[in-house]
Amino acid sequence: MTNIKKIEVRGARFRLPRAAGTDAVHSGSEYACAVTLLKGDKGATGSSIVLTLGKGNELVCDAIRFLSKPLLGREIEELMAEFGAISHQLADHPQLRWLGPHKGVVQLALASITNACFDLWAKSRGVPLWRLLLDLSPEQIVGLLDLSYLEDALTPVDALAIVKAEQPNRAGRESVLKEGCPGYDTSVGWFQYGDQQIEENALRALEQGFRAFKLKVGSTQGERDIRRASLLRQALGPDVRIMLDVNQQWSLPRAIQMCRALSAMSPYWITESFSTPAAQRKAECEIAELHKYQQRSRALVEVNENICRQRPIPKEKEAREQEKTAEAIQREVAQEVESLPAGNRNQATDGKTKLRNNVTSRCESYTASVTSHPCGTATLVVPLYCRGSVAGRRQTRSARQQGWQHPGLRPRLPRRRSLRSRARISGPRPQ
Image (cartoon, rainbow, N blue to C red; front, side, top):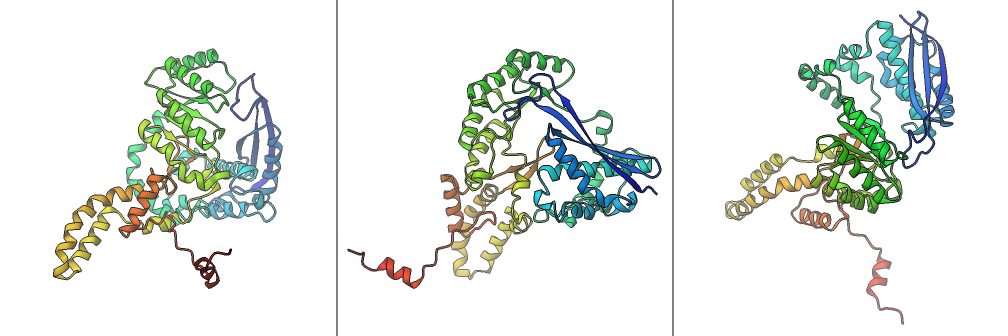
């Protein structure tokens, strides 16, 4: 039994070498860490760090001090037995919730507190954290999670079903414990590095065994990004993965233009291609252009690594439940045809084959989903054609004429005019 008897918060700041850590937003970066220490009454200490930048570290440290107070005196096993609920309570702080809770300063503070709790839990049991997690039951794993902001897309029941379904396949993934996970090198291509330094860094990392590299782009001069990306591809060859990080510096039209221009060097993915809040709805429609590029080049184009936290897909679970698979639709069509009178059945059967051929493409055209980002964040994958594009409007109109309505598309209902409005519209024009 280990009780948390003391909570310490420390800040550490590290001045980086010239041009290191820079991107299209941050220049002269000073890396920092907000450190959380949960000290147990039996000698074990749970520690955690969260990466910050410069003066912002002080804000995160203060938030950790405020948010971690309810943990003082708690027994670690009891705490972790209901950690999902505890996490929700910490994020729902009555005076700090409006500052987050799932982004910014509060999110970083909660991340540091969470990791310190897990670290103390593993140390109190005397096992590595990965072993502790593998030994938990599916119910215990789900109990560690706060899914309150995901319930439209993933309920605790759904999460439990996913964990249980994947348990029989664990043996096929255990090799990662011996071989490790492939990593990539970000330090080769900081934004303010010169071309020669990027090339030298990349070749040195290649000799060390890296086969994936990230380059910071997002310059106001597009030709600079194209030149540096092409230089890196030429130096490393066609067999390595090169990833581009824009840090949300492109507008949507600019992102479409740059993605097309960069397709020649075959990027593995392009992350944070533009920032979405100012023109969210328009972006959701026109971003299909980026995914046309994605289909041609097989490169993953990510809009914004925070998009799923800024604006989750509404009622995704409900939409997924309502969405019918092609096979289910075909069965319904067959049942409807069989239920028709004999005189109308032949006419309906003639159109059934054509309908079946179009069902699959319509279902795929209207599918929107959330997939995992190669770096562990979330990526919004939109339909190939969205409602705002010409092709999207054509698909939507065709689907509605045939009686299909995908839950992700908001129907355009006719506006209801008042009697006064009707009279004014239908009456004579004023002289």
